[in-house]
Amino acid sequence: MSARAKTHPKIGKGSHAAGGWGAARSTGEILLREHVPRSGPSLLAHQNKADGYMCVSCAWAKPAKPHPMEFCENGAKATAWEITSRRADRGFFAAHTLHELEEWSDHDLEEQGRLTHPMRWNSANDKYEPVSWSDAFEEIGRELRAL
Image (cartoon, rainbow, N blue to C red; front, side, top):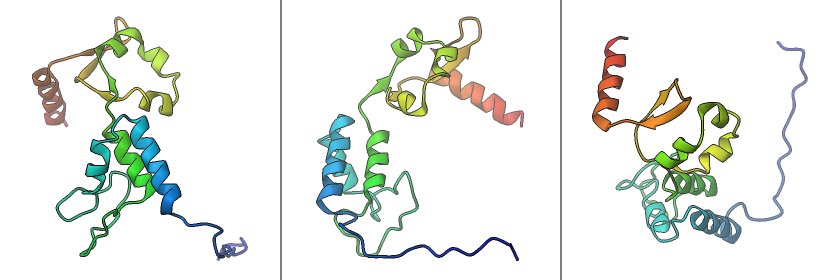
């Protein structure tokens, strides 16, 4: 047995609700920030439902009798980040080298938005460049077959 002393977490009554209006306000703010104030709520209404989709950040169960809002605040935020209208397009990658992007924080990279094209790194100019979907799938297939 380990020589470490056993610790017992303090369990007490919270000073405020873990959800409620504060969580609803925070969820609304992230939907606005991600530019999805209209589509976000309708997508969240289907999150963790039998006819919907699973949370992208956890393993929240799909209950037999789900509540209208069957998600937590962090799950709503993760979904909003996935459905953001912001895009990291060709212009973004043309303006930045990989060396430069390696210095950015994960948060700053995430804030650029979703990719719009398959990309391949060009070592000659240290930049990601768009490739066609057929080329991307062909190259991925070639790599997988080589395993």
